[in-house]
Amino acid sequence: MVQYGKLHKARSQKQCRTGDARISHLRYKHVSIEKGRPMKSMRIHHGEFSWMYYPARQKTGKAIIAALGDSDCDTMVKAAAKWLGSHGVDVLALAPMRPGERYTGWHNFPLETYEEAAAWLLANGAEKVGVTGGSTTGMLALVAAAHIPRISLVLAYTPSDFLFQ
Image 1 (cartoon, helix red, strand yellow):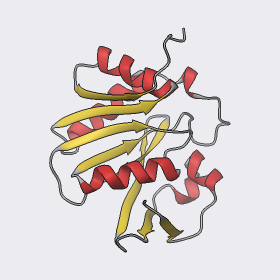
Image 2 (cartoon, rainbow, N blue to C red; image 1 turned 90 degrees about the vertical axis):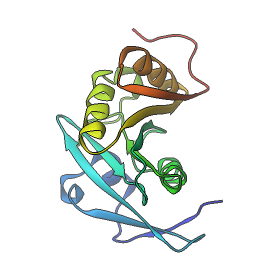
Image 3 (tube, rainbow, N blue to C red; image 1 turned 180 degrees about the horizontal axis):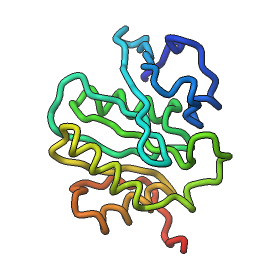
């Protein structure tokens, strides 16, 4: 089981979720108790959204867009990024809100953000891009993969069996 130590500098979960401007350009270090090696991440501002980027230690040219949970830097995202990163996969985590906005859920999330995220990853060294999500974000991952030719892999965990309109 992956366990994380304290953040290098204390930050509240609210600041993490909203991409507070005060921490937007800082690098985070999450120390793994299991291996004692830091996992790097950095906040990327792109258009009206901000993403959290978790680069892999060894580059393989593979990357995945992850929409897991209600934040781009909660425990579920960090655990997935750590595991994927150990296999050479960069992770670009999405959050369902614009910086500074109140949480409204994934059902209003613009699909174009997946296309912009895939383009950003390809422009920054990825050769192949996949998407992943669970529940509502699993449904979004399926729809994104169906409509965006740049996406070559989809991992959808218990996706919804209907589409929101």
